[in-house]
Length: 131
Ligand SMILES: Cc1cc2nc3c(=O)[nH]c(=O)nc-3n(C[C@H](O)[C@H](O)[C@H](O)COP(=O)(O)O)c2cc1C
Image 1 (cartoon, rainbow, N blue to C red):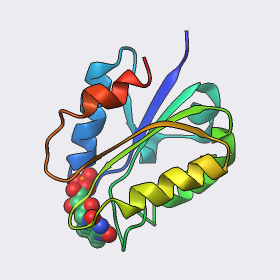
Image 2: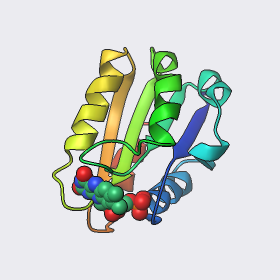
Image 3: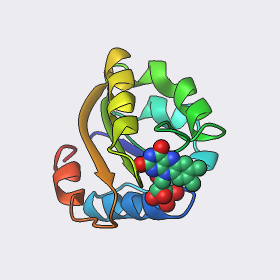
């Protein structure tokens, strides 16, 4: 059976709500705040689900999530990856850039999911890629 890890960062809870919806839809997956996550969690997993909202100017959160992502990026090679996060006023550019970065590192981005209005119904389509 494949092992899935679900790691997220949130400031105001929207990306956390997405992580919890993903965990509800998949079995044997527990959302882990990035502050509690380690490189080993990623290395042990076959499927890596990462959540971070659009921050700064269409970038990942820079003090906590980006350093963790930089640390794990090489280990995403060959793994199935899902990327998700909440956003506000933008058009999702942070997610397009994030997906390209993972694919350039030979990670296999199977699905992305962005939410700008609190509607979590997209969780079904997102999680279907990892069942
Ligand atoms: C400092 C800061 C920077 C942000 N930058 C962007 C941005 O570049 N593009 C965007 O669409 N939303 C941006 N947002 C909006 C957040 O992505 C949005 O509020 C999101 O729901 C936060 O997710 P969270 O509740 O998981 O923290 C920004 C919010 C803050 C506080």
